[in-house]
Image (spheres, helix red, strand yellow):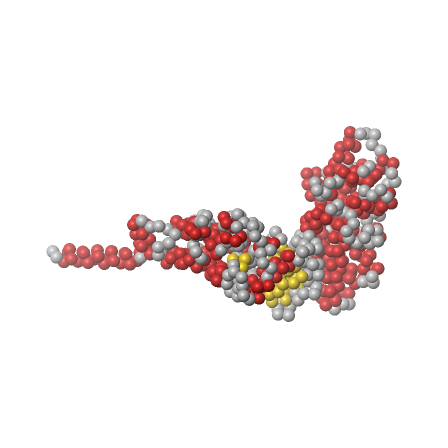
Length: 248
Length: 314
């Protein structure tokens, strides 16, 4: 799975200051492939769901077009035409999806499954399950939907990475607290005292562990954001849009 | 990967954007509001059991200029100990690098919301006078606010006012005190920089003539604040007060916030307003309004006396 924590974790790219968009333009095919993995991890579900919502494509068509879309990004140099001074990456990608659909409608000879390249291993059933929960929005609301799904995908990747990091560092209580307090939709919301009793911690530990987990989550989100934006200015713009402020 | 509901997304967004207060004395309680460059959070200082407003700058501060500016603002405010000026408790930097300061938390509407309330004209004018007193105090200490507007003024539950956001404040003369180490006229208070809010900014401020700014620059903004506070039901003498305060030429404005205060006082007392020239008719109408009871008592007395004389003489 492209957004698996093992791929999203550190080691593939340096922690900061490295953009997958830049790497995707590298002459080294391995580097390009790794860069594509990172972009795919954050964007495949928004793209697939957008095809289903905006263009009302059936599952098979949406899957084919998603594969073809990502194959064209790097394989056919689509990403090289991206100019961060003119648009956000996700706006550009959404436009590319629209163009791909328009071309596909004109070109009945469209190659299936990414134009001959190896198909990506994407869990479309999982995306379908999510669509079943959220429902398909009206086509005219699909731009907002794409944005929301991008945030959901970005945060999902960050949560996976946080889970993997907490496990690797022997801090399961940190993630358990984060999961119970910030991810679960329990109603009523648990209090810090509830969580302390539940996990055998002191309320002070709950405060500190949860703050540490959130701090790490924020760091991972910003790292993912930095890797999937093409310039410092775009990164700051996206961070401000997502988090309300630009980071240091 | 587990599904993240819309509620979870909202919580995660808050968790990722909330200030990390570890290492500070504060505990986060929530968000109060967002401005162009900063967000204000409600926090608690558990050691004192006190709620504070934490103003956190949202923009990066790579050069340290913003931290210096916020520190400067805090030190200016430390000199302005007045019930109408929100005190700053502390300036610091969060673990994520953002700069913040903690100030008094005021629960109440901003002046723009108060202006839309059902307060009477007299209540509005007395409230405005309290704003004038706070600003006059700052002027007396040699400090210009330079960004007075309804959004920067809070109204407390007992009608008290707090003038906020002294981020653009300017020290008028070189101080011989701890402010002496402030960075002189840099960044946001620099020469030629156009700073302030359109609609409340005096013409000389809009032109970036930093060197020519004085207390009359704030008087202009106060006139605009009064106009906003009065809304569409402004009596002519009060409109004249606003016009005088907002005159294009500084020399034609009130020379100080206290002079403006005095003219508002005159209006409230029914005396002649300096900004409103009176002919005999207007003067008579004002005197009548001010002394209506005495007028009718005298008229009644004269009528009765005249009647007695007339009928008694028969």
